[in-house]
Amino acid sequence: MMPESFIYCLEKVPDSEINQKTDVLISLEKLALKEEITSIYKSCDSIEGFEESILQLTKNDDNFKNYDIIYFVLEGEGDNIIINDYSYSLQEIAELFEGRMRGKVIHFANTKTLDISNEEARYLLDVTGARAISGYGELNDISSTKNLDFDFFSLFYEFDHIIDVYNQLNDNHGTLCRILDFKLYY
Image (cartoon, rainbow, N blue to C red; front, side):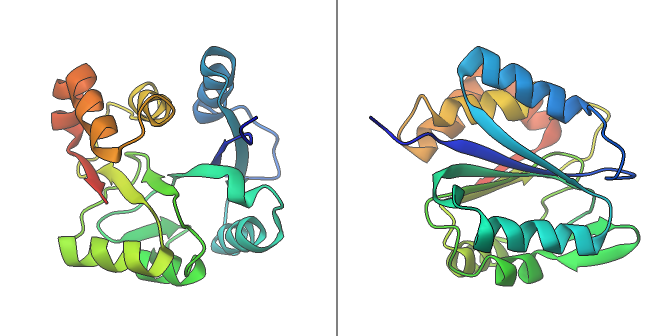
């Protein structure tokens, strides 16, 4: 029997103390029912909450080895995330994850642009050990969290090779992938 696999989602919300059902959480629940893909959802409203969630995930979560996808629904541009006017670089995130992401995919929703050079992507992959990093080059009123991200996640459980996942996503959603400038580094 194969071990259960999970998606770990960390979403920036206005107030993490308020128990709220965001569109992302609702979509994750639908994914679990439709595709039987389990997810762990966490929200944060500060850079401290973000760091605490990352440290808890990488050091204290017994299921960490079973997470296939680390899904960030955060704001920001280029190689930075922004939480309450605090900018956090992807290099800083890579250092938090140093060597702990072997075989995992780090995916950013289009609430944050992923506009990095191939050299920066290679650095992130090498430092984290991730299998791939993906996201979008364009912020747009079209939300990737409605359908595209979840179809992308489902494809990881259908195909063994990352390039097959990429090609199938583009076959299924080519126009949307172009509009949002879908990016995959591996």
